[in-house]
Length: 167
Image (cartoon, rainbow, N blue to C red; front, top):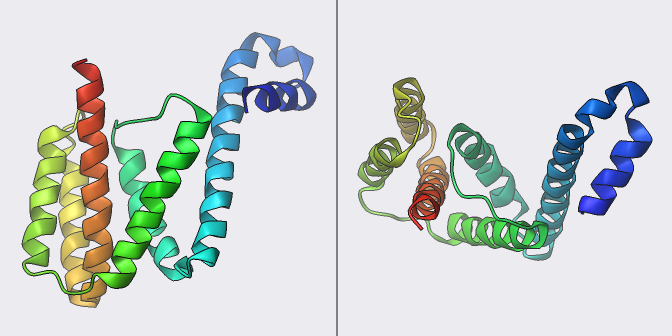
């Protein structure tokens, strides 16, 4: 992926930006990795008949993922495999797990865990998360299952990042 990003950067970027090529190349590599992962995830969602669950999970999970400093894989292949395993797990969980006792309480506990473990300690973000929790519970309880798995995976990724910092 690195070679493709370098090639595309050299082809697309004008010479006047040569001083910024390393940053642009890194951004191009991130974009290519994200698009590749998304493409594979879409194909897998069609194969496993979880497209609806995939779309809903992405809708809830991506904003959480972007809001926190959390674990990132060190190579493209690791990221591709790890991300798609998470997406498949989440999609199947959303599709087949429908009745969870104390769902609101578990979600609220995960929001508190996210705040406690996060590097940012952003109170506004966590207030928004609580608002989303209550909106989901009034709109449709199945949305709470999606929110639960998104919060759970985000908490694990934060824990993995914290473990990275202590190794």
